[in-house]
Image (cartoon, rainbow, N blue to C red; front, top):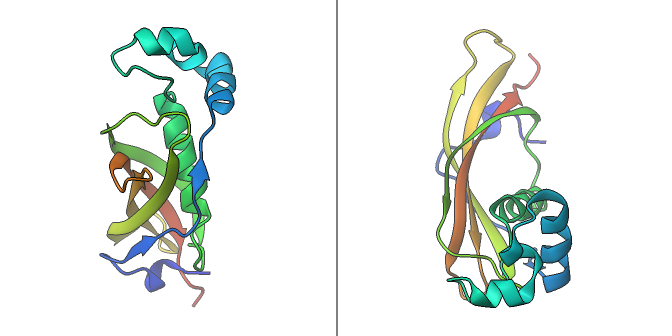
Length: 148
């Protein structure tokens, strides 16, 4: 377990896990959470500017979260997520894309109101099989300090 004191600003980690997204998964997710035709119907997707079935933006972010939790290292002693910032979608994530994640600690500071914890901001980047950046976002997390 990595506590606030163990976290180094600028540390960058490449995830080793990958995830290949299927057309069925895109359609199933979208049918429940973002039922736009270009996410649920392959013919409608072919008629869109993307030209093929692509994942909902929130589905793509969820995949980034999944892959970031699978990074092979000691987990941070996270209490809670505090917010997401600077979410950017650079490329659509399409059926049969294989995704991987990289994470970098951007900043950290001690909590003003709770001396037993701190706040860390992590940049999450999601890349496709061509090493193209598809999505990036920053997550602020509340992290425990090591007990005195």
